[in-house]
Image 1 (cartoon, rainbow, N blue to C red):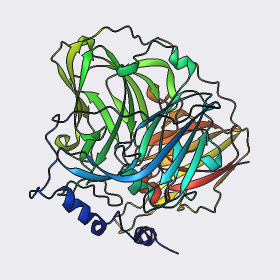
Image 2: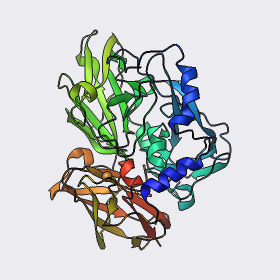
Image 3: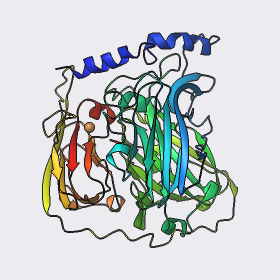
Length: 482
Ligand code: C2O
Ligand code: CU
């Protein structure tokens, strides 16, 4: 049997050109930083501006379908001022662009793989057939293309897409292969929420840079990734008007959990989560996001005089507050009219059908300090040929999911469906988890109870820890709906 390390090493070795190895990067690096003799350092917080994410345009909107073409390619982009960093991108964008889709209208994307490695593209949170799911083994190689079709027969949701090629996904996503896919429906569009330039998608993540300002990927590098990026820039500032904004937050980190707050302790209104809007908004001074989770948050800056600067802080490690505590700063620079409003009722969630099957799932990872820790789902590493759970189409089930570790946090993600979180550690869940979810956090020792209905597609899909380094280590399993 091959070990994780040998498979990974083999895969990178097989790349030939060795794009992802230091050797392969060296010539490009030297060209990009010829005049820089000193080590590159990440700039002081709040000295660079946060960009907004570009929106992808379809090249064809005929036949009830929006059709896109995307090239997956390596480019150099400015993350640290004055430095060109090699990144892997969808169409050259770092971080990934935003695709805006509508419920009931199909999207088709042809991805061309211009890398030297196989890739797959998974629409996270999407209800799609197995052949369009972009599963770990369903990859397409260098120089080839693959078309994914998304029916969008689901309510509005904050989806995203990212690489999922087994044993490579964690490095590919770390190097840039993630993008938002914001699906809106009529209910959402009829609400008077902040819109247009006042609805701002923000991808948050961590990263590690070397002295030349290049990304450093090491498997399970929990402590090394201490630079926080918001929309691809290190702890940037963002100029806002003194009015309400809607922020579509995504944690695209491989392994970092964020716990966000405003530096003045000010209130935020959370209106949505992974699977779209909540039934009712709620007011909070903190927003938690484990890797892959999304939060839809309204902040009303009208309570601040023009000239105020408020920091969006992160209160969770690893890393010191100096390193990882300053996510971005909102600078209130002007006034603006604000016709927007957050209604008391946002949507009605579908009623939960009676569950007839119970399953228990246990996530664990070796935490005894061994060289090559294994990631385990129910005591086993992922085997792409093994079906771990067989589900009868049309049933509703309760999954009780536990993190058996004492130190290491995990989370739990299922492809194909949006579930409901019924309980956390035996207690009813907080409002942030009361909506539709596809990823749920699991701090050490925690247990959640999930309600899931499998009434859409049949076929085989994965469930896994979304700390991508962990799933790459084997913390993943298969379910088959039939
Ligand atoms: Cu973001 Cu297997 O998923
Ligand atoms: Cu994990």
